[in-house]
Image (cartoon, rainbow, N blue to C red; front, top):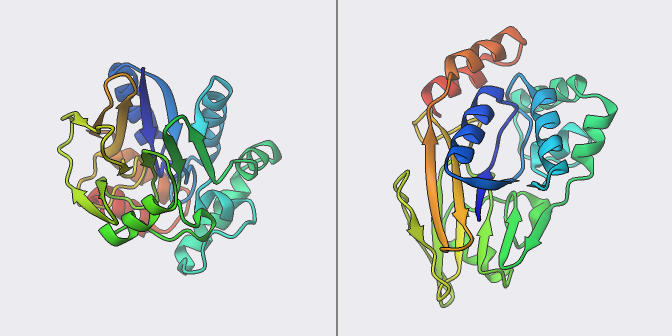
Length: 247
């Protein structure tokens, strides 16, 4: 069975649809959403409804900091004014049922030898980033799961544990990687809805439970349309510019 992994959708309908189509074409029978369904983008209600429908059919979703912020929770204390304005706008676009769905999302989900979490395993409610090998080692040390899948960092990354340290591995899109049982791994599929590695293509990944292999994908989509919708909604133009540049 293959599991599709999507993180940081950020209310980007076009990117979400493209990634889901690519993952289903790759044979994914289930989807896992690693948080930040909303924020930045122009289609929060559509994305929440889509994910809620998938969860009703067996998908997994965890809470992200933007999701928490949109329902009045603690979304992180370092957000700048434009981000806070987008969260406030997002909250106004959601109805009571959509907000209730976000509010009920768990911070982490454990499934067999896999942990799904948005930010990190050591304190997921604090929203600290796994942006270095040191942070990856700290996250891996906080769980006995063999595989940790997280988002929050908008760039694809893969780390494996070796004794008390962790080592970074740069994945090549589309090339399956064996994630053997002799090591422990932390994988960040990258952002579906707002990539920040200077590549505007949406990011996602799949994990094959039977073969213990992992593949990172980059999926072209109509990012110009998504950017135009951000501007039309009156959201900060910087969020649209980032989609065009992948930053």
